[in-house]
Image: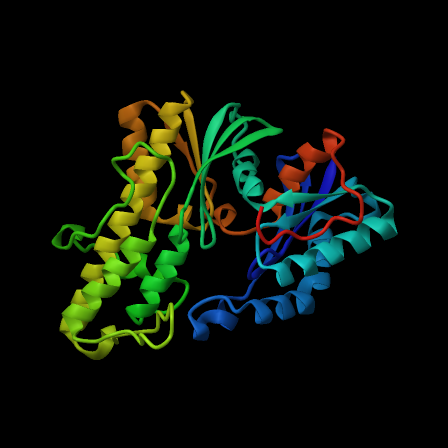
Length: 351
């Protein structure tokens, strides 16, 4: 089965053609990082406008690279949610238009389930059941995946997602966007043990996450250490508080803070992931989503997996970030099971 996947849940416009849910014939992604960098995060209205500008070109390029005409596809999968509603609607409108014009089946795909199925694009030995940890800018979720159509959410963040915490901490440290990349760069080679930040919900046996307290602890530390304060007149304000390049001392301090923060986040993700894997007695832990590209997280997961006899499986870094190949892979399963949608389905910002 040849499936065209379309992804536009946040700030990547993507299209891909995948054969039989495993063989990627094309995978095109247009990123908006440069558009949103000056704002320190994704601006929803700008994101949706940029999707409108490039969606047709991206889809056509995916078909061209796959070497097929649009009429040859057997079905279309498109991200239905969760995500930014305006961005989602652009991809869904394009997918519906093609499905109608070509008389092809279409299905709306759960974005996080798509991330889980990215693992099948590179590994032929993934078998059910397994536990999946999806960790990204908008989500930190644990799933017990019993079968291709039996996916249960067993843990999620109670406040900020891990990637969101990375972005906000990077912003207050004056490091820019995207936060995960710049914090990992600043933390490289730095001893994380010089500072101690909290690791929430670690001793309660629960599979939920919480990163709001960690983020606030970093904020308080920065305020005290540098004698600055956030703008308390703006609720939720998380603007840059310092310039790390103002002096060598500031640069060293920011690197120290970055390392300790990253260490805390990856400790929590590793502990919770393996707690779930052992609770559900699986031998593989799929770790996916944008934050799964973090090198320290990968090292900790591999070390802990060897100790516990549970294999952590990471998609390649390209497939960790938002892409349409994973959406096509998930759509193939749904379409093969006869779970195509009518053309009247809507986007879902939350799911």
